[in-house]
Length: 112
Image (cartoon, rainbow, N blue to C red; front, side, top):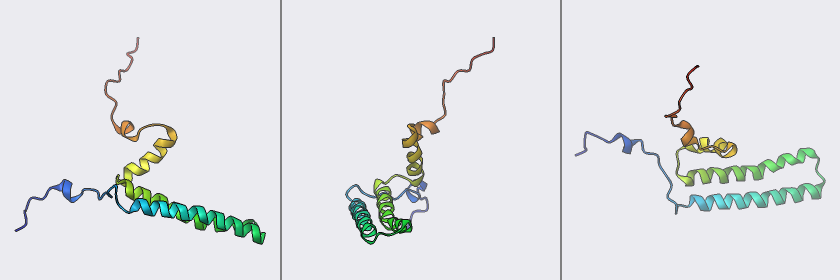
């Protein structure tokens, strides 16, 4: 028999990865592949004396770095909205949680 009253919080709870999950290993592995990929592409471009268009091959290791970043996002277990808000917050030096709170106690100066 299934209950008729379901808890909304449990039904819409974000799925989080456990700290011991394999996503961290995937992130490390993809980051290492990206580093070796940059080295290999650089050596190949230098050995073949490729033109400036050869630098487009650097996008391949860049995909490994993007995959590593995505795996770290999944492994952190925080919701997407908070992850995306944390990037400019880290660059600009503010806390996204403090910024979203309404400021109470701020007094306006009365005109004289």
